[in-house]
Image 1: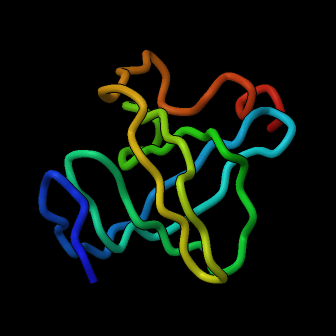
Image 2 (image 1 turned 180 degrees about the vertical axis):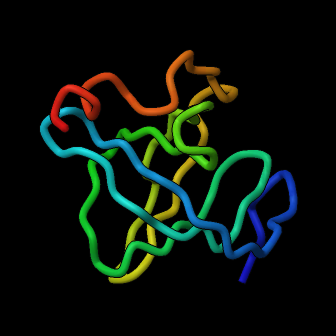
Length: 98
């Protein structure tokens, strides 16, 4: 298979939280590969929207992502911009719902 990525992929097994908007909420996933430009996330069949936010640290920082491919178990996503620092650990919409 022809490799089209500009930077190499690094295999990992790291839990993440995925925020899909206030109507869909927060879901857990497992990042299986990461590169400078994106991630491969194991979701086990969970459907997520085209745009979502990803956090490795309980929403202290948030990475805006865009889905570029999906199959039955995994989603491949690119990073839209550098990680954004948040002042709260959990999105305000989630706190209000609790």
